[in-house]
Length: 163
Length: 351
Image 1 (cartoon, each protein chain N blue to C red):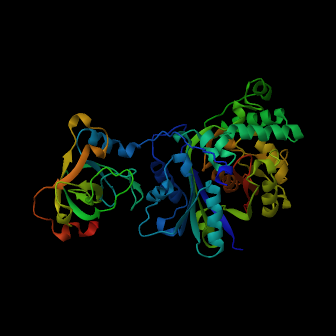
Image 2: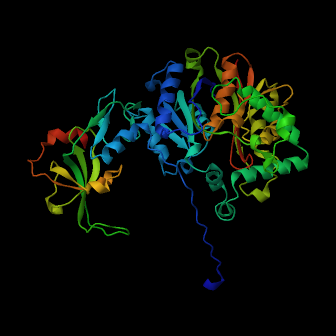
Image 3: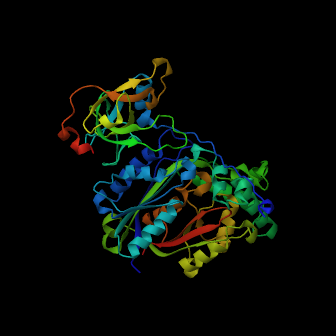
């Protein structure tokens, strides 16, 4: 019976012109030059990295001053990936962590390498490992991963409000 | 039924292509509309948004729009994957149920982000029509052809609609097309999608529109002459194009009937006619006499068509005519889908 079933494929595709928006230009140009630039909310003064859509979602206002953050940061929370999936490029188990960069008020996600997954912990201090400068683009992928910076762990109080 | 009125309306600047993100476009409009109604964020107890992810090419892009609202402390909000006019309807229902007193409604679209002729095709039946990629312009041309052959619309009427719209647009700073063009001159131009000429099709735009609606208790605090919603209804025609007469809009007729359009004279109509022939079809279907009703004083969607904001803009522009005292009774209309498939109609009154 299966031979009687007519199948057709109807691929759908549309091209889009994506604009980062003026609020994210500084962030992307910064990455291109190896700098991590966030933006400060003029109302609540929180520093966003990345600056999302150039908006503070808490206050509903456009972000203002650019602020250099990091490059080091603190792991606020993390997850050990043990499950293989299609398109996986990293050997399991590996750690995806939320890192609160020094000077920033929101965490960003990145990979933790150069240590055992079992050793990763909340409060662990980490630093970025950059790709070769010749390969830099306006992307966070310029940082290949974060690794332990061998500083003492941050006190819980330091990141308690950023979990 | 509770008395509900539109008390404030504003539009962001319509542009052919902005470098801003949708969220960056929305933020100043929200600030401005709150200022216009002289209210605080905390006065708004329901927020409702209309937009389309196929336009931005980003799944759940509407969620990021909440960033523009300052949703802390938490707010009650909702979204429709439709023009903002349908967000207005949801807000109206919310107020009718007593769950909200004051609502802020907005619609936004960035038409420049992609090929909208193609993106809009994704509204069609996904099995046998959308894969043919007919394109929206061609479908609207089929609708125009059907109307012309049925004798309900003439090419001259279409040219007259365009001529009047461009002239009215000259008084509206927020348009992308305007000017003084004689209908004869327009008819001399070549067809781009027979029987449509370039000027029969809308000037696509990136834009945002926003309004505030509230109940009788607060309306007069926010507006000297609120636009009271005296009737509202929305209806839908078959999705299957082959089951419809594309030269008519049965759903517009039904929605207009239930909204009470013909119960009294209509001073002003703001119809969401994105193509010139739509205006003629809609007026006939809805029972609006174009010779006695002031049609689209803003210039309408032909002269600035920010997708997902342009329908709400018709409600806002109709309300403005009431605010200013230019009209006592106005009809607002928005459409979605191919060939006027879905229609929402409201009657707005100043008293």
